[in-house]
Length: 177
Image (tube, rainbow, N blue to C red):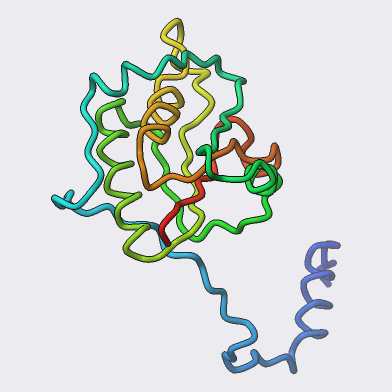
């Protein structure tokens, strides 16, 4: 008579324990809904447009670990504090990883325009921390910082909390929504 191994015994015991188990039919309670990725379409003439020389006029050379923070003069300071603390939930997201500065600027223009059309009040932009940019510093972070300051549709922006991406992510509060 052949002896069974402990693995064979465990497998037989498991099959015996679950032989009457049947899967539940699908229901609304076990359906996972994921947030759709924001799609970027071709720019429209109504999209906010800025020229490269405008971006260069904003003096803001940031280091990889620096946080972003900005508010328009008419926006109360407490609004910026609430944004910084994650009080406003973001309803759309744009990931700029792997883009050049000009691609990122173009994607930002379209994203902000579409966010305004969709009536999003707070959006999230992932630009990365810039650790792989070498001696150039955080290229995308500087581009995002400069462009958002010049975009009239932006009321305020702040780097996210550390658990939500920290200095590699910026939360943007849009005005006019």
